[in-house]
Image (cartoon, rainbow, N blue to C red):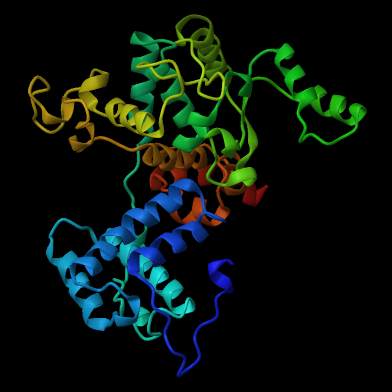
Length: 380
């Protein structure tokens, strides 16, 4: 039974005993039915501290949960001093979802969920404006092109910036998902999901322009896409990126297969296999440290003893940007170059609404210059 199939208890219904952790695990199992693995994991991280708090408070039955418990947890989190307002908003919002499940399961008093005081965010607070600016991305790519040409870092950075893909999508790419030569198109002739007649397929392939990459959802082999099958899509790439990919595959890719005998595009350096999402995140962090790409430190630190140069501590550099911030910057770059929100949404497997409200963070003067090009057309 799905959690949305539970009915809220009627007034006077007797509550059914249920331990906080039992409800937590059942709720997560139901989230797995229609949420991505990364989303479920984020839910786990947000709600687990609340479950542990209840256990420490001696609440071993959700029937006994009341507003005072919620208030004490809220006060504890707010007084910690190390949590941002939008982080608290996300955590408490997810805890409310967990409690609403408990209500539907007839284990929590209906009034308890409404006592979760979720901080209200302004529009600016909801939209994290931190991104990788276009010029910084260009500086990184120029450095890699000159000093680490066709390395894994070069390929990763180029793909992050040009495709705007999520880290999990890049991790999922196999060699066979990269289409650089005419012969590569033969692989598409045997794709089971291309359910069209032979003549139609040949007509389609005849109009396909190389190079491109094809993101595919393979959940049974540990490479799911966030949008699942809805996130499967071919994405055109530039000739420049195509050339870097050719040289990387021919000369610099570490040979290896994953546990499913697939050949990943981005292999792990530590052992033959597929790079991890955390591995991609660490490389994104390190590549956005200015001192790693030939720039002076803007934070008056000495790279020789900077804590952010220690393995595993890269995120301590104020200049670092996560893969998500590369994606945000890429969307803005696409928009500044005249791409329509609808085309970006299709390319990056997101919604037009998110492109407009969250991802697209325009350089206002640059965007005005683009509009200027259309101004003269008003009087033609």
